[in-house]
Figure: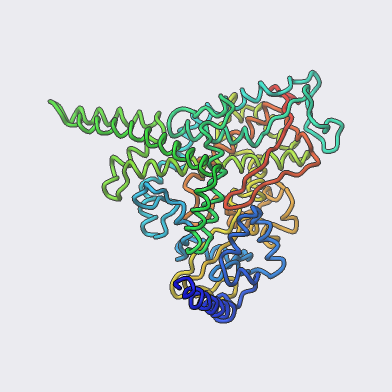
Length: 550
């Protein structure tokens, strides 16, 4: 009888509810005036399906072609393809805040939000202020030797896979040349994208823990960390865009998926490893505190100790610097061991992968464009010959002064930003006018970096093409203002300078050490486009060069 009662009253009630909801969503909701797919206007499940197809940015570009610059992708959310909206939404002091999409990225053991998930802007400003000195470019370059260690490991590993330097002068690959045949045993090919991911993980280990994790040295995805990120990021993205009533069902389905359990367990091990390192440093901090001020001449000893610690900090790692933040300011803003662990995990999971994507993209576009490859390699060789680039390891300050290298890096990051989805923001109370339309408070809006970076009004009629020369013109200020490969405004990626230092150092080191050629120059790469762009294998023939080869 109970089942019959449910069928008699609940199901008809549910049908009536959905009819009323559809009528409201289609004709009376604040977003009802904006075009878009029918299902998107009545349910966030449409957005879930889009994420599951792993082709978000291409589908969003198609939506804009079909519906125009403002497209409704959920009952209360739109995406915008209008450069004028960029500053309005993401500008400093815009009033727009992160949405509940970011809630799902919080770890169960976190007692408060980290820099990535904080939604309250004053709270974010306070938290970022105390750690900002650790991530300034001036501080990052103090740790260049840690990056150099990983660069040396990568170059050494690729040398073992590469063909020997030919006796004749080397030349950059030519599309369609006879050398474009598939690799043979005499012409080894390396998956460049995988090696770069190994390298990026090792850099994080070297910067934060004073030693690489060993990905490059062991030529393996240690502890399955890369696989874990690949498995869990799509699930978290689906949870983030899903309606609240569907999230428990998605979590249950995920819990029953074996390969997701493998990824989750790898992520747990990653957290345990980070926590262990933090705990070891914590004990060192406590031991130091216990010894402060004890014995005769306490003040003098304390001063000497501070001088020693200052010297050690300059030669130490970033974990040590974060521990110093905890020691000096932690009580003021509740920044202690848990928060340090959270910050390190963010660098591991997000920072390593996004940087690897950018490096791989830059190399890929260079290899697909022989003229650009030739020009860049000539610039690097000339700078090395003139003593403007150090040997064996390039300094960031040197690389940043090479105009064509700078142009190629910016162009690669423009065409393939690490983020594949619009960064959702919530319109502040009182509403705002965006791209000529009024949006009431609470509506979610966002711009996809890929869409913005191909805006012809900003980047020119050839915005879809790889053209580094666009960055060599004097009028580049407007283009730079519309780049969001590291986010935008006050919420720009805290690890931006680490990524830039990696990118600008490793590209010239690789190109002066090796000749690279795509194993199949006529084949375009593929990539999964969800919250993050995930690049597929890029098999590349590698030939050793000697510095100074023509």
